[in-house]
Image (tube, one colour):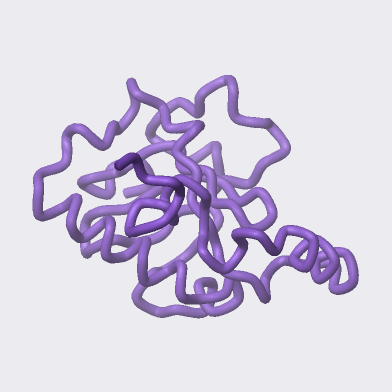
Length: 144
């Protein structure tokens, strides 16, 4: 019988379980507080650059670490992520990057990275609660 949006895969298809069906409540909270730092993140792969530090270069155990870290981050708020010592969240200066930023990334966006392991980083930008991933820096080469 086909999956009708229930079961272990429904969360992937419909976004973060905390936001599913509650967009109105979240939108109201964002409007009243003016910031989304009190909300958990969701992750978008829509803007991943397939030609610049792609995920397919990562090994199986590295991908497991990535998934584990993303799941852990979904349990935090943006404020907690920014303060989390192990994630080492930081804004990036585009002028110092060792890779070209794709033209389709909005120029007004501030790029940021967070840590997966001692060497591995994920780079992207935040759009309200969504972290739009741009590249998967396996060797910490983009910012060194």
